[in-house]
Amino acid sequence: MKKVVLITGASSGMGKETAKLLLQQGYTVYAAARRVERMEDLKPLGGKVLAMDVTDDAAMVNGVRQIIEAEGRIDALVNNAGFGSYGAVEDVSMAEARYQMEVNVFGLARLTQLVIPQMREQRSGRIINITSIGGKIVTPFGAWYHASKFAVEALSDAMRLELKQFGIDVVVVEPGGVKTEWGGIAMDNLRKTSGRGVYKPLVDRIMATMPGIEKKAAEPQVIADLIAKILRTNKPRTRYHAGYMASTVLTLRKLLPDRAFDAALLSQLK
Image (tube, rainbow, N blue to C red; front, side):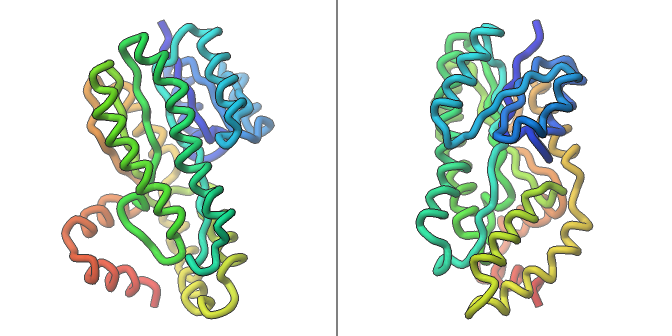
């Protein structure tokens, strides 16, 4: 029996590459995103496309119901949908902050709620939450994005403890630098929100580092390969990371006191 996987944020980047790889490996893949037209290329590969906005409860309920009615099971959920709302805490509106949390945290949590009953009934399942090294470290102007990813790390830990008794694994993937649309969207938000006024000098320094980082960023295939490995593994670890600087940054965060880490980070923005 083919394993059934639901992937959110599958219209580009890591989500789309994961969908392609899993289809090649024989999984039944439901690719979900708002931009359905950007997933048409998955259909010839056997992909099943769902229009799903993770801030729309009805869309999530209908999507999960459709999968269960068609397949009778859901073996894995890859919570990949998300974006980065960047700007100084002083500048970011509360409406924008709430939307960041709605997409990255509450949408993920609600979709997970919807698949858990089926997985409990099966006594098996795997929930893979895509966070970021930004769920362990913080950079200037990313406060709300980092808050959302820190929250998903905590949610994942709690769910792992709760769901172990039902044979459901909860795994966190923490990408480092990866070539996706994420960086461009985050920097556009930063420029619009805090690119003028008192924060402009630091914003300009961050913007100046971006071309070099983007050049060294890993291809999204790296994360797709990691997710495929997690799905194949009988007893997966609780956390995995991959991508540019992921290992280095996470190691430094463990070893350095806060002020030393702050100084190391700011030194890269000179």
